[in-house]
Image 1 (tube, rainbow, N blue to C red):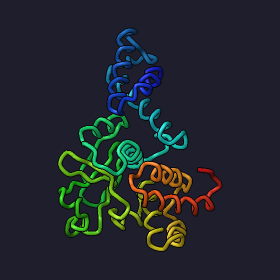
Image 2: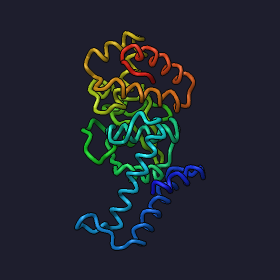
Image 3: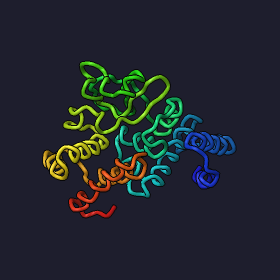
Image 4: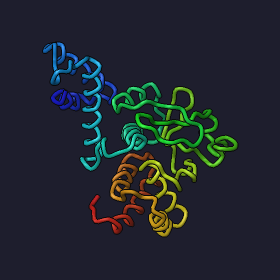
Amino acid sequence: VKDGLKEFRKLDLNEVDILLASYGRALHALSSEWPVLDGDELVTPSRAIFEASLLVAESRFEEITEGRLNRKSLDNETAMAVFVLSGWGIKEVRFDVLRKIALALALEWVSKSGNYPIKPGEVAFCPIKKHEYLSFDLLGENARKKGVYSSFVKYGNVLRLVLPEQKHPDRLENPLSDWDRLYGIIMGYRTKSFGGIEEYIARGKIVNLAVVGDLLKLWEKYADDEKLRQEARNIAFFLRQQVDKRW
């Protein structure tokens, strides 16, 4: 599978094609050496596919983040956000494609319309109607009026990343993922410039500032909007003074 990944990258295949091709490699290796044992345990086709998925995901993370982050170091929501951002920016993505990506990350998509805890093996989206996204201030009445708790919204067969201003303030103030913390930093900057960032950090919202800095670097690289990129550069300038790390 590792050798195959090098070949697949040269062919400029998309993420799903690489994933499926890697499954084929894993199953071919398994069938050609059948039966394959791990100690006393028989290696099943489903296990071969699962391990191929993890290998593909880890390899892709190293490429996307230039070795700065890996899959194991990130929570589920952040890991998926990195994949979506790097592949599609802040544009719409077909949900059936992302179901396959979730499989590669050993995750399952779940629908959550309000506040929710992050559970192992899950990544959540908030179901909305398309007109609600096109005019996000209509994003529902009541619980969704101020924004959504998840990092993704889904309408029809389309999913996309929530923008920082579309995230519910409660989730930014009580972050459950590093992606929440990234958006908390961004909204702090928008509110009070560098002082807003300092206040957010001082309130103890950031677990690992270096990780948030690396996510900010990805946001700057892949966000499809020059204003967002310039904003990210401004924030990065400030954060470089806060951590002993070069991005």
